[in-house]
Length: 541
Image (tube, rainbow, N blue to C red; front, side):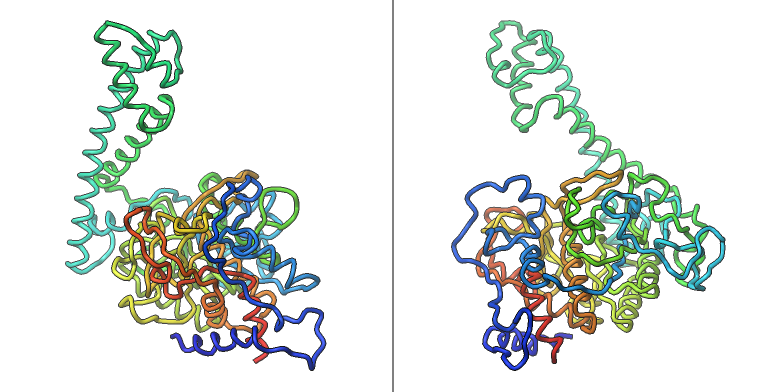
């Protein structure tokens, strides 16, 4: 599956060494030197908010942040060039198709007539104008290990026992955590009330608490308690909210693990039958637009309108976002993901972004078959590596493109880890999964600014953000070099990336220092500029 690699590395070297003087070009790509990482340089000044909002577009040489050189690519390589429209499938929680910065780039099915209740294009989905919603009105869903333990999905005994151990562990942790947080919150509220009366104010600073001079035992005790609570680094009011949130999360786990509710029943399908496809609806925003936050942000990273003076800029300037809702608040079903991939492929997507993942995949073969189907139709799948700070050469993270974590089933899946904006030893996001065999490349994934529902914007982080950054670059390449195959685009993004020859902190642990080159297959970060240089060369072969 790596047969392209030697050829591409060789071709990339030719870009620097050769000159094409026999043919006049408006811009001679062959005379441009690819971008490399500056040595022993870190950005000393903090990023301004305007820089932080688009750091993934910045240049590692000029700006000394590990961005993808997107702005430089447009300014130097794509000036006065026009690409072809590329459909990008976003399989996620849904997309706010009415968002001010996205509504003009949302895919519209040209073969379907809205509202007539007829499957005009005979693709199996009625009135699928902007995509398809495989979840119907479902918002919440159980985690996969919960479904396995509740015997909602068929698995072998080994998988069941592993899921049961996870189930028992999570339940015990949540129960202990809830008790601890409740006790802490109760103590905090009592001490806060005492200090509030003593200072005659509801909100106060640590300095004001330290200055309290009282012989009364209850005040002294409250003073010591509040000083300890300030050590969490937030105002007391915010700490109370944070503790209440932790208690709520623990309750959700406990209730979910003890809850036999079948969220799926409202769809009316059999989730264990891949041939049962008549379910869902055409409302790609689902029943609550707010719940599309994740998918809207992902779509915004890829394709929100560039230079329109609102919000942020997308990576790709000539895309249509196909919204496919298949990821609930909980773990996605393998059936939904397999059918969502096939839907994207059958309806013209050339790139599919998958910013989701889970540790168990009972029907992973359905997803493998869908990936192979996408490969046969020349569709690139870009997938987030996951946010567990684990090495996925050894830990499961689905979907993936290998049954044994060694041999790829197809050459059309690009798995992406997340970068922090600090160029140097902190450049790997503390949460990002790694893997010398199963993570292909890294892309920006911390403090990424993009659209969220109801015409708003927000900074979010995760490999969920790194994946659409890489998918945006893939869409750009497919737009300007449409004859390149999905496999070629994958290899170009991998092999043209900027090599980082440095040791970095892994998992946010300052004692875990490793060479960046050991964290992924390539030891590189995505770079649009270099990718276009390589794509230009390969396209002429």
